[in-house]
Image 1 (cartoon, rainbow, N blue to C red):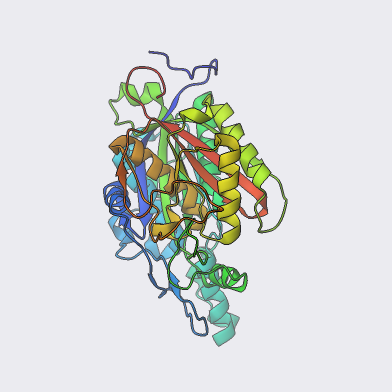
Image 2: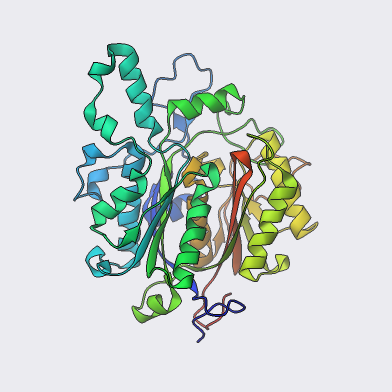
Amino acid sequence: MPSVRPGATGKRRVVLTGFGVISSIGIGAEEFTQGLRAGRSGTSPISLFDVTGFVHVNGCEVRDFDPEQWISRTPVRELGRASRFAVAAAVMALRDAGLDPGGLAGRRGLISVGTTDGESYDLDRLVAAELADGPEQMDPETVRRVSPARLSTTIAQELGLADVEAPTIATACSAGNYAIGYGFDAVGSGEVDYALCGGADAMCRKTFTGFYRLGTIAPERCSPFDIDRKGILTGEGAGVLVLESLDSALARGATIYAEVLGYGLNCDAYHQVAPNGDSVAQCMSLALENAGVKPEEVDLISAHGTGTKANDVTEAAAIRAVFGSEPPRTVSLKSMLGHTMGAASALGAIACGLALTHGFIPPTINHTRTDPDCPIDCVPNHAVEADLRIVQNNGLAFGGNNAIAVLGRYDGDGEPR
């Protein structure tokens, strides 16, 4: 069985062996899978911050999450909301992979977490405290925990890992895929023995207000690719994936969810908020080329799919430019999860891995009629069973930061499927 990727001499094959999930439709890989299969909606009225004065007040909050169930070494009060998500998801992912943090001591590792807002939820609270009571009333614990770097470093702290690089990647809504691509290269080259990669964000008033002022917050629900779609819902959560070499996974008898076949990145800097279709198409082509995959071999696309007029039309056109007039089925998880910002493409990659493993396609919910300007099969409202072999996960971000990851099913025959 070859241990290097075909066409990539000397580069180790990289597989996914553990998933940690904090989301509005389920905590942990099992609950998340159930939520995806059921087409569960995470939408509810926002309670995390004051929405007085806003006409539209729905979002996708994480509820019933007890950080102390997962975090034991680090005092939870020292962590911001996003860091709590990130650390808990990392602990979850290691347990899911059957790895003991103690067994990683002395092994080279990477902890890479993408984000849009860092700890802006806590920064919002700081500003509110200053406006209300003056700077002398600021909570010093909150001040200490607002650095976005802590999303990665506190994972290392909680797990007791010293021989690791721990960057936080702030490329907005595609940051999760950026982190996964970084881990793929580091593990594949042998620079590290394992990587914990993903994304995390907490809902905050600052970002909600920004999207609201742009006129992109949906009144009630997120309906990507629908003729009557009204925009996004802000969401939150975290997704962390364990990446290791195929040889390492086989040697310890690990469960392999999927193989990371490749990824593509570009930044067109076309516009602060508007996507560039040619650049999105180019990024997909880069990812497929890096993965050694032909467009006709892709069975499913997890789209960025925000539910805005501009994104959905642009992304659908870019998909058809790459895949032709009959593209793969293309779904948007944001119909269920809302826009989880830096966690979005990480949760999308996990959903793709679960779809490959369990043989199903999650639906695009809240769908009535497909917009003729988005001519794709978005698998409306109900999950379908499917024999998936290769899937593509799209992450697009403001400023033209695009990141696409390609995953394949591992069947144990020595070849990526």
